[in-house]
Amino acid sequence: MDIDVQSFTVAHLRRRPESVETAGFVLGFDPATTSPYVNYATPVPGAEPTAADVRALVAAFRERGLTPRLEFAPDAAPEAAAALDAAGFTAEAEHTYLVCTAQTLVVPAHPAVEAPADDGDYLALDATLAEAFSGEFQSSPEGAERLRRTENSGGAVRFVRAADGTVAGGALCSAPAAGTAELAGVGTRPAHRGRGIAGAVTAELARVLLHERGAASVWLEYGGHDSRRVYERVGFRPRGTRRYARLED
Image (cartoon, rainbow, N blue to C red):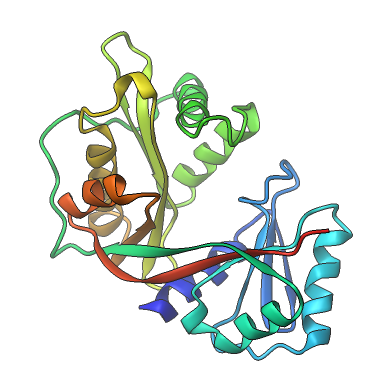
């Protein structure tokens, strides 16, 4: 499965507004943001980059004023992992990823999950996710547009509406590539946590991708044991690991 997830990451970065390929790596950039969580690279499965190849990778980031950063499954490209370590890249984290298939998926009946219907919904969801992730990014029209682009390009965006009409929480899932799709950005506003929103949104997105968008599997990463339990309840199972690495100035 590591190869599937790594092949997905390669294909996903090739869909960025700007995609650059150096020897052994694919780099994806979005000129609308400098966020390192949007602008990053990944090795091609089985890549064996040289020190010069890594220097070319770094140069492509530096010339855009960005921090060199990668996300990848190390078991799918062990030689690339070693070359990055030798060049001074340091690990931000290494996370277990979980996978859901049509056979394991469990969709709860409540709460009700919606798709965005208009600009207001996309803007509200982007603001909700910014709040849920404690200011890791600022809500913006560009962020709302990225959510719309996800929905319109074969992925899906879903949310749960609070009783007062605001957005309580939501998430997004990319369009499938290499048979799988990445579910990300699962966030709930603090005032609405503990009500099953994250699980409902996660399950509905997996259902849409597995049954309506042609994915054979959906995968995600989790940030703690509590969130892992949420995902496992709706059918996600541990499968492999992904590493985040960057090169500081």
